[in-house]
Image 1 (tube, rainbow, N blue to C red):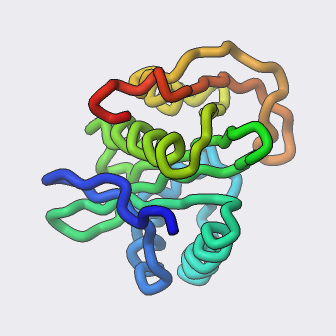
Image 2 (cartoon, rainbow, N blue to C red):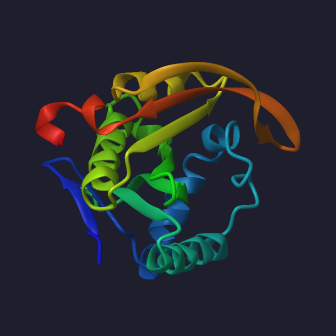
Length: 187
């Protein structure tokens, strides 16, 4: 079984959340719904505690099947969930996956997403044997693009109509990470 904890320092812990932590997950999303919903179709004002519970249950099932690996960022001091990072769209045949992330609004600007991208990349390369990861960000999502760049990801340019957002095709920037892109202390 792959690791449940992928990073810990004095400020944050990145690990697999449990179904019992659904209230913490829900609270983090509620505190950030305006910002997350600007870029993620799944997040809106109607997001409920039951949605968080379902997400965490589905996370367990997908992890067991090797389809997705979802982790939450926890603030060590308060125990709050302060973000999420996941590997999805895993294609074992090509050893590739996509990275998705969000950070709670009152914890942005602290390079937490960069730390999370580097930690999940290390996990993907070392524990899952993947060789290429992609971060695909809507062209207008400057913050997500900055995270990709600060994480050491290679900018592969703007791809036209690469994502669908709320039923509309949108341009998106594609970034890639391969094992050699990570700082040596993380690999």
